[in-house]
Length: 469
Ligand SMILES: Cc1cc2nc3c(=O)[nH]c(=O)nc-3n(C[C@H](O)[C@H](O)[C@H](O)COP(=O)(O)OP(=O)(O)OC[C@H]3O[C@@H](n4cnc5c(N)ncnc54)[C@H](O)[C@@H]3O)c2cc1C
Image (cartoon, rainbow, N blue to C red; front, side, top):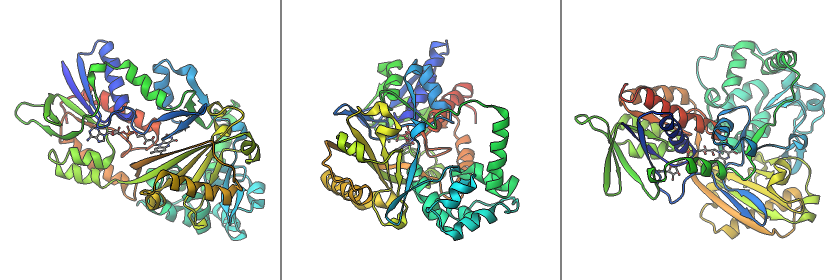
């Protein structure tokens, strides 16, 4: 019998456990135990029902393009619970000199592919629009070193593009700043486009042309979620696992290889148990802590992955407010606008299933230094800041029917410049520790689909080569 410990009960650890459970049910001789330090499983996947609204405390959905989370849902029998974002109403605004400006049609992340909408958009100055035209003649370049997303975007489109688009788009996903994130790790497709085409604009147009020729299928919704919220995914995994294998309130202090007996010793509280393999499914700094004794070098590398804290605030309003809000999915706030808020989602438009027709549901987001600056304030004061900024941005002065504040300390990984090289060093060090697998958002993607994939891969890796380097 192969005994495997999983450390961390977020979606990465749960996906690993589910994969082992599937293998066990298919006849594999495997047993597992999952350790979670908090009283609840699911990590940052948390949904609350408030006044008939589904309020997401952590992630509210995942990108459809990455299949692993939706595949897991289908394996759990939740295929009929998957919902898509209401893309017919997809519009995102950027706060520009105090006013909400719609992102122009044809903008593919930050690459303009339609001349007229971008040409007439008040989002960019004439100088930036000229840069966009010049960008079409950018020569191919074999990038042999990493650089920040800000430096990359600035080379192509200038600094206004960094401030108005790259930074707000990335802070909505990573809670971080374009100046601190690695282009190779965060926007690998764009780095590749530069290598092959030089110009991102030309590369995007070529890709669109190819896709238009290949199929006339209706594009799937950009985001997918679950009717009853993201927590339903974690709960459905838990329901499939053996209850006695799940330990909550179990803080793992250390995991150590056992050179003589073989395998690993996992210490949680006063108890230590022996396993053949361990899956560490923790954020980088927590993984660094538990692995300090096993490998100080690996621990240093894991601890070097930076994390940012974030706060989400869910606000419910009545029909009058709903009718007064602009259409679309919400808005992003460039840092240069001097606000605390980084983004707000009009959830009732993006996922209409999440709020009854007579309610508006807003999800407001702070991260990084903006989140740190309000971290210690009581919830009422944080709600007060959000309401003040919503009044300035949207003219929204109504009393909320409810407000919920959720704080996530150091939960979002920031892939800094050189992240891929760090991953290579991590992998080399991990291979020196047979029976150890790593999963989670510190490595190759922070979204839910990437975390699901990392957990499932880690479980398969240990089952196919439990004791090999
Ligand atoms: C506010 C917010 C919004 C997000 N929005 C989206 C989104 O819309 N779409 C998307 O795809 N992704 C989103 N993400 C990212 C994504 O949700 C996370 O990266 C992912 O869920 C992380 O899962 P995980 O299991 O790796 O980590 P976690 O969920 O952090 O789980 C790790 C678990 O390990 C436990 N733990 C820590 N230390 C120990 C220890 N020593 N012993 C035992 N257990 C321990 C923790 O208690 C925790 O439960 C968002 C993240 C946040 C914070």
